[in-house]
Image (tube, rainbow, N blue to C red):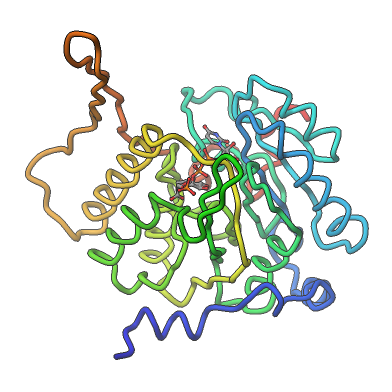
Length: 335
Ligand SMILES: O=c1ccn([C@@H]2O[C@H](COP(=O)(O)OP(=O)(O)O[C@H]3O[C@H](CO)[C@@H](O)[C@H](O)[C@H]3O)[C@@H](O)[C@H]2O)c(=O)[nH]1
Ligand SMILES: O=C(O)[C@H](O)COP(=O)(O)O
């Protein structure tokens, strides 16, 4: 049976090979340039302690998509309170590096990947923004060109998610299909349960996606790891299924987090889903959800308990921030 989700998948899924850079350059040149960013394209890498990988990714984008083909207008690394050499390595490879806390410093401090991405709206100038995780181990420029394809060629598309095969790579051993554990065990079952129309989005949590500033600036951002699920559900509620497209980017290899860290991520994902069910009028809660995640560890005499707060915080739509004038330049104090 053809469901809404499978019909969307057939209509709105392409592969990176469908979008050669020459096609994108021509589409970029042919755009009616009306946005405040004058058709510019920004690539953003949120990075917390990614000195091992960030330089290779930035250098490849710079070489292939700035110097060889003038597709990307700026590469911005948001340094998310790294304690290693992420900022130096990224700058040496040719990125503009912006410290997360240097953007809108007058606001109360918040943490997490979503905070880095929200701040990036205030630190970039493009009308199209491509997000790429800085921990990818097999990055290639087709990640960026693939995500830009539908946005540059179809004005009805506002948001593009990457999809890929995700191996689990540990200690030199590769298990095909073993990666994306939170995606497969938490996020996709939740989406199938409550938002079946989105069941064809194969990597709802994937960190490689792109959107129009005119859409992103109207959406709230969850500050932690719920940011991808929050954006997906909010784009769907705001603009409908057909504003979404996905592009097959092949294979994605990244650094894996511990089971304990993924449990905290899962808690944030579930709380984000809960918040959208409530906000979008899909549920009437009788009480607030609990945000404490308990961990037990064996000791000599019994068990120790540790508690993580996995509650999610949010930033408002960037367009509501005083001083924001449609691009980030007006807000960034110094670069
Ligand atoms: O406080 C933070 C935490 C992470 N990051 C960066 O965000 C990216 C992804 O973070 P990571 O910790 O590697 O997440 P994953 O374990 O890979 O989690 C997956 O699932 C998350 C939940 O949806 C998504 O946010 C990720 O993009 C996706 O890869 C990396 O470049 C990090 O350096 C920050 O900038 N600030
Ligand atoms: O996206 C996910 O599901 C999490 O980041 C976990 O990914 P992993 O199983 O590949 O570490």
